[in-house]
Image (tube, rainbow, N blue to C red; front, side, top):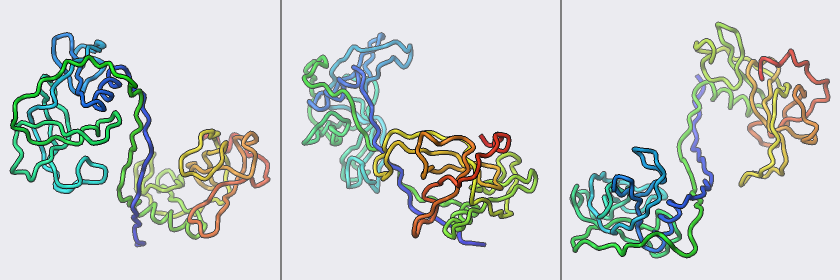
Length: 313
């Protein structure tokens, strides 16, 4: 049995979000070392604030300041902090009900060890030295044994309100494609495309998944397909992706390789984007040392008849 491949994989992108009036005031307040909640119709105060009452679904905008001190309601110890977490030394994740709030805020507590943390302990906010209008303006919580701090009664009106945020979303994991896709990837390194045939319906799936998506039975018979195929559908990309060295506009489409019963996706090149069409016959273009086709280009053959690929749309 061939070796099953595995490799580290990082999925990362910037997530941009605009803020409504409530979240705008909350994050701007953090920049100014002010914690704001929102008061519901029944008199409760929610921190972090939300724009709609979670019970009645009514819109709520009555902002109220709460204290930077509070009480731990529950906690969990983090022995090994990960990249991007609030502290780079072991700390506790805590839910803190700030004085004046009726809900708890999740953040980090800087403590020397788990024996120093308990439900009911008093804590206060440690503000970040540089603040920009984000939850990270709260560096963490720290133990506090002083008197409760009284809020000043701020109503949430600031100069230069924060109106949007950009958060870097990232997922690090090890991807193991399994037996079938390992064989598929290895075949691509030899400039071949290999799928698997279902023993029940006899369809050939590329890329293979190890089981037929229609019949649900295991697939093991390897079948080489292509290299040529038919473009079944496509889209024109007009927005340039970060770190992608391809000029826009370009075409990305689904390609049914000859002998396959499932279309795979790939970039279409070698033809003006406004001349690309369904039924276009294409072939792979490999780069030196590439482990998969860089793109697909027209073969010069007549377009495929719609009846030959309509089931693969």
